Image 1 (cartoon, rainbow, N blue to C red):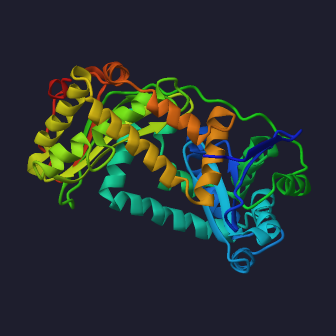
Image 2 (image 1 turned 90 degrees about the vertical axis):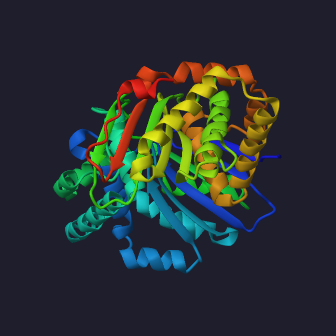
Image 3 (image 1 turned 180 degrees about the horizontal axis):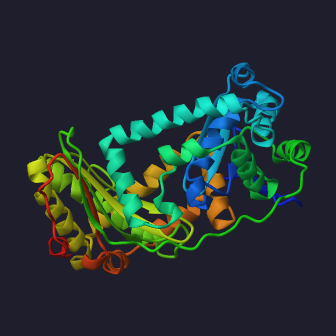
Length: 421
């Protein structure tokens, strides 16, 4: 794949990275902060997400309605999100509308109004968002798992915050946090589509001339806690299971064998978990594994939803598959299937300008450079069965497994010995 990627680092620390795609008429541009909920103090939990919401409520130049009208007037598709380690604001438009689109985004992240009345309204909106997570059991079990697994660390706290912390945010606290992090030195601007890098450089120079700002504080790595947590929620129809093990951080040299391991375990419909638990036994509708990777730590996570009386059996079957990864080498056919699945998923996920833009920003945030699709494909192709087995043996062990179950029953107990792998 030919990738026309260029990068500029400005004197104030802002990073611009773009990919020119002459075969399309659209441009996707995003402004990314290198910080998310991980940088929050405990009393600030949820403030990054709160500010993300507030930036759309008005700036010193536009009201909330004017922001929406300005985006609609150019057919713009705006989006934003907050994660553990980043915050993003993006828009996709026709190439001819890039200057206007950039003006909207730059206004959002440069001059929010933080009106007190809007803060009170948005506080209630986010409280309803928190309630929505609490009402969705597969979301809730992951939240409970994460809070227990990274207990005492910001990575373990919810991105949305809590009813209590959200209730304490004021205009002053929001403005202070905004000034601390929304500075050019903490920004990555990424773009992909029918755009010249030089035109983006001119836009950045026009809108982001302020100093870089203070350096972003680094946080200590969390310590994983291999807990067993079983909580009762009476109004459920199923038990929801979350099993976790340590994983690698984003740039780890053995991340590619870990990708293969996860793909074989629960990454698709042909995976071992899906075939052996859903297809052969009919014990679950949803059964999947995934890797969460951050700057310095990671986690392998397995989720299943099953009938309450089948909970123990499903947990035991998951442990069997974890043990099998350690004891038996992948067959050549299984290894090649996993490689093809990963490379195909990657290529399909990068067919839009928005996904290409996000890929550029994430690679810059974690690697400090552009990691090409060809480089990733070579990494996947180089994996051997022995490497996958060695990774499984390193990461998966009885004493390091963590288990969270959300169930309508309150008498279920699972001992550490039942997780023997």
